[in-house]
Length: 110
Length: 116
Image (cartoon, rainbow over all chains, first blue to last red; front, side):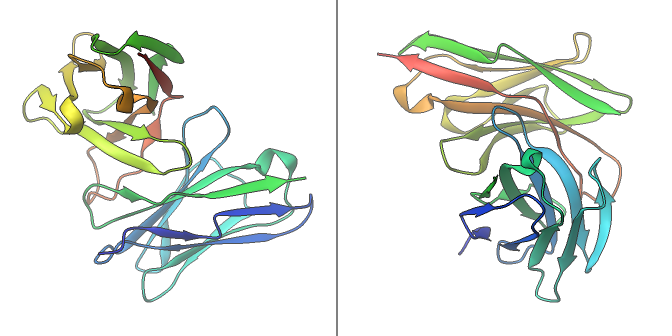
């Protein structure tokens, strides 16, 4: 039973570029949440998707957007990248219960 | 609004010693409380959670935590540290409203170092 998988594991982008991160939820889970974890800090909630709609959103600008597909997988898009967007991006999936986390995508903005 | 404060960004203990990681929360509604562990280059693994049943919660790997409403605390303990416990630990809170799809608010983490 595969857990939450995220791709890519690492990537480097230049300021101003756009990036797309991908997440496949744990089998049977229908809800996907995204978190940003800056170095030395705890994860911060970005947004949550289920039934292909954004249901909750944290305190992040509109440069951060997402999508959920019919198979429950999800994408996180960040436009106009800033140096401060460098972080570990974690995806978590759930089915109304405890969330399962992926290993994350390490984004470095240079 | 909810928040979590973890006292001590770094804690060092000797192998076999008591582990105590502190967490205080602030919540305007009755909370759910969680402890997660993160090993290097990995995601978060749930250690234990409090959801209003017993106030003393037992988790995996010998960890436990006690919910104290009067102190707004949810400290994590383990009687005897093992080298494999060295990791980053996060306390988190969510509210009980909604369908169960709750966003988590995390503390800033405590790095546990275990000395041989």
